[in-house]
Image 1 (cartoon, rainbow, N blue to C red):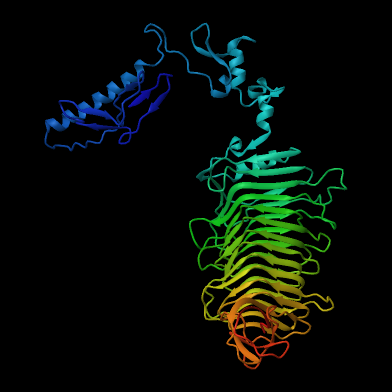
Image 2: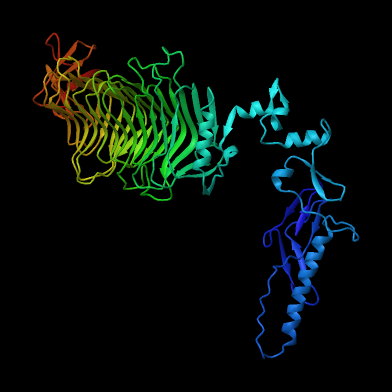
Amino acid sequence: MIKTTTDGIEETLVLGTDYSVSGGGELSGGTVTASSAPASGEVLTISREMEAVQETDLRNQGKYLAQTHENVFDYLTMLIQQNAAGLSKAIRVAVSDPIPARLPPAASRANLLMGFNSSGDPVPVSPVSGSASDLALQLLNAIDPAKGAAMIGYRGRTVRDRLDDIINVKDFGAKGDGVTDDTSAFLIAITHALTREFAELVIPPGQYVLTSALNIDLQGICGLTISGAGSDVTELRWVSGTNGISVTTDDGNWWLNASPAAKFGIRNLSIVTTAEAVGIGLSVDLNVVTGRPAKKVLVDDVVFRGHESAESTWGICCKFTDCSAAFFNDCRWFIGGPGSYDGIGVLFEGSVSGNPAGFYFNHCEAFYGAAWISAGSNLEGIYLTNCSHVAGERALVWSAGAESGLHVIGGHYNNIVTNFALDGVFDFEIIGALLYSEGHGVNEFTHIGISNGSRFTICGNVFVSSGGAGAEHGVLVNSTAGGEGFGGVISGNSFCINGNAIILGNDSQYVTVEGNSYRGVSARVNNQGSNNSLLARAFSSSVVITTSGGSATETVNIPVPGGFFLNKPESAIVNCPQNSIIGYYDYDSSTATNLVFILSRNDGAVIASLTIRLSVTAFGSDA
């Protein structure tokens, strides 16, 4: 059944969805019922379409069954009627005319009109130059670059020029149907894009199957951006275990070259593999020189993942070599599935000559894997703002050098080996993050591990245990760089873990610990180093008491919340500006939860019975 709209557009309706048929084959006829009534002016055309087959097998010397033969003849008659109906709508010549010649081959009649020669046979005819037919054919020409859209004006240029601003992979044959191999179409589109000074390669919604790496050399151009329609609707899927996208250039010092180095961006798509911990999803090598003059790389709303399997993942989702100023915004990394600890999310590498710097992650998420970010030496500046990595082994592993520069602001990190493993990292801060330990079994877990580092600040973080039988440490400072004179500050954090809150190793120096809170820890601060400063915790309280009176001295007990002090405070003071009352701290009689003071009058007289306000301050160590 075909529906024809008031605009003359025909739509073939689907049996079982748009309409149903009952009573087929009955002598009295049947019924066709539409799922919804046609709109006013629309026409429904019902036709019978049968397969041209003969499926009845009559045996030699078999019985003559009249109904069987009748059915066969009826079927043949209906096929004849079906063909006759189709032929009645065809263009026909007069009965007295001879049979006309066939149409010329397609290549001979392309972009021409159909005419007839002196014998009445069809021949291709060029339209009269400048006629409406000529114009129509030229506008329909999609091959000649001077015709088609090039003949239509748009804001001072042509529509072809406007369309060419953006290069669409579907214009080069890509299907995006999840079945067709689109590799060739992508390579042709990329080659075309690299002929431009600036280019945007657009990938519409779809699932694009790729069987080899897409290698992109940015040498000699100023910029390329690869844009999908969204990470949830545009998927690039590699099915042969190869690498994904590889971007390179040799123009590293754009501020000195006459031809500037290229800017690269990729956004709004998913980079997917069917392999298991094999290949690199996105590799970018910009060959920057000392001084980091490369243009920035932008990675926005890109998802790296496997295809329909928890075991599927890239060996390395992203690899950046000698790049400077790379920005990751709203990206996600699925480095395998639950319980998968193969693969790395982002690998940063830098050469001595390149010394790249500036890697910014904003509102990014990562899951599983051996590590979300793995960074080597000869690079500076990793910035994580409100990011998260959960259910993997490590969030960040960095073996760095002087002036590394790590900044972690906020976010959520929950892993099974360590959240941050920092070796040789200088000038860093971890502030306001939520740090969990993901059920680490019998393994030793460290939220923040520091070796050979210095000039750091760890403050305002929350450390929480999620369970696990192994040893657990909040902040473990194995060693700080000698000769610095400033190790770092650990201040204002909340530790709610099953193990040691802070360990300052034998080789730690000049680390200041102050103002942290602890609950349920086995040890607050284990200080094994030298020249570290464990500043006293201060407890302050203002209480109103009524003295008994009648003696020269009186004992007063001031309660302290349980867990505030690990041991009894080393010192405490009491102040009462009223009635000449003074007091001293009775250390021997005090405990971690009760401060004892002996009150007296400053003139030695007997204390009267009166109500007074005392201000108390006590100082104790976390060690």
